[in-house]
Image (cartoon, rainbow, N blue to C red; front, side, top):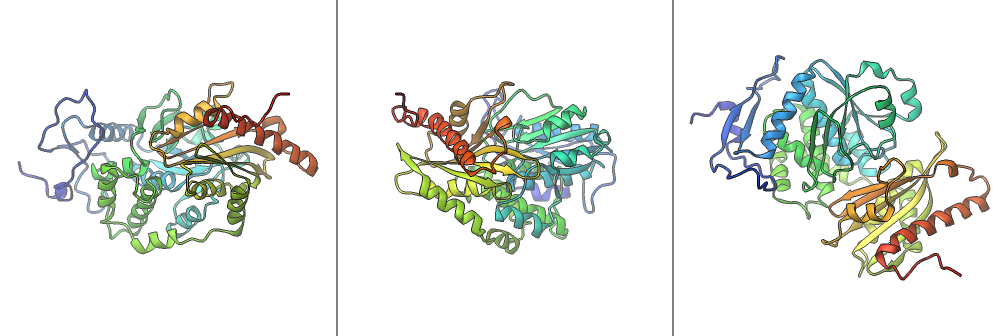
Length: 427
């Protein structure tokens, strides 16, 4: 079969997905199927949008579905909503979606409600000029949401964003959900691509690129920076590729043609702040170890230092004879007078499912929404304090409040870790 010259970069491409028994036998030879091109001017040097389809593969199916969704929303304005504290995987994928959507004259704004406190996340956004914006709940009140025809959830399913309910109440419809975490709830969206077995959402987006939704060009500075961000996201969510699977390595190999190694190294060399080091020190001091679980409460944390909690969990899990670490604290947002108990879990135990563990430990709120979840080797939880938020001017009261939450969280965790060791003893 004669191949289109624009497909030369795909000649040796092999897209892999988890086997699906309903797919039937997969053809050994790839078949290139041209899709309908959008009625917009092509990108410079773009020869057309094609899919490399292997039989009935999920990658090809989802890429085609996403293209059709984008075609149906040409000229729209969309909001890309990230989790309150976005990580490299979320940031890089949101940027990639924005660049893909531009080809269909869809204007996207990338927003999050929390803050960037991890030094690598700050470096990623600053050094690549990644176009993400912080929208607090107060900011949202000043926005006219009627100008948006849809919103998109990337690397989350809305359960970790304060912005979701306000956007939904404004009548903005959910158009796209792309994530690699376990399904949190039934999602009413035009397009859904949720693959819990994939290690990083960056892998899913790189597969979209490989399948032709955007032709990366190493002469375009923005493409190089976006590829670098994707490589960072992929590396971050696969623990420096040590937990990567074949499709993650395939994605990294593809990105290696475009990313800037020096730029990535600069992002990774960002130093920890003194406040982060203080939180890690607190976690070490306060930790209890039961059945190879290390559990540490770190007290009150400034909102801007929230990412010190997962960094402390990353550190504790490296201790000898510890396979799982859970670190938590009360995060205080002075601007909105809100307090939330936030925790992170890290594990090296292959048989421990962070998503299942956290959901069983903390359960759901009155609306049926889980307080947390996870993916392979990592998870997190957020428990709003509601009526008990604030009022910490009195140090004795603040101490008492922390002790109550600390004991409650330990009780819920130890109920699973070691049921006999309950921190609340009956008389």
